[in-house]
Amino acid sequence: MTKLILIVAAQILIFAAVASAGDLGRTMNGKHLGPYKKEKLTHLRVYWHDSVNGRNPSSVMIQQPVLNSSSLFGAITMMDDPLTLDVPSNSTVVGQAQGMYAAAAQGEIGFLMVMNFAFTTGKYNGSTITILGRNVVMSKVREMPVVGGSGIFRFARGYVEARTKSFDPKAGVAIVEYNCYILHY
Image 1 (tube, rainbow, N blue to C red):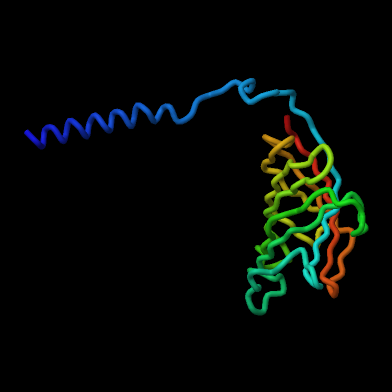
Image 2: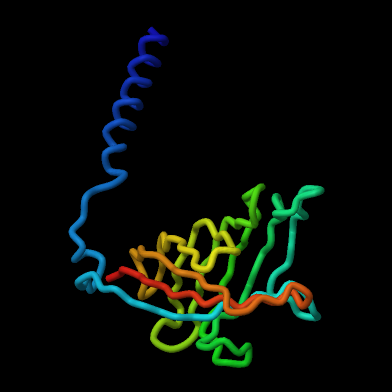
C-alpha cells in the first residue's frame, strides 16, 4: 500500500511539473514592452583607442600566445578602450569598448572580438551594443556583427566596419575607426 501511495504521489508531482512547464514562456505582443516604435537604422562612427603599453594601458594580455606563433595564436587580451568622436586621443570620449580579443587564427593575425560599446554621454548614455565576430587585422576593412544591445539599442542587430587609422607596434597603440550600422526600436 505504501508503494502505491508513493507511485501515485510521484505521478501527481510529474503531472504538475509538466503542466506548469507550459507557463515558462508565452508569445507577447510588442505593446507590452513599452513604447514600441518602428524599427530604425542608426549609424554611429567612433574611434577605438587601444593601448597595450605605458603607465596606464587600456588593454592587458591575460594569456600569452603559444610558443613560436607568428600569429599570436592563443593570446587573450582584456580591454577597456576609450571610444572617441575623432582620431586624436584627446578628442571627446563618448564611451568605452569593454571586453576581450583572442588570437584565434594560426595562419594569420585574426582575433575573435567579444566586446560591448558602452556609451557614456549624450543621447546614447547608458546604452550598449554588443559585437561578436572575427577581426583579421591586416585586412583594410573588417566586418563584424552586432548581436545585441541595451537601453536605446534594445533588440539591436546589425554590423560594424572596422578600419585601422593608425598602428604603432613599438608604442603598442592602435586607433581603429568603427562605423556601426544598428537596427533597433
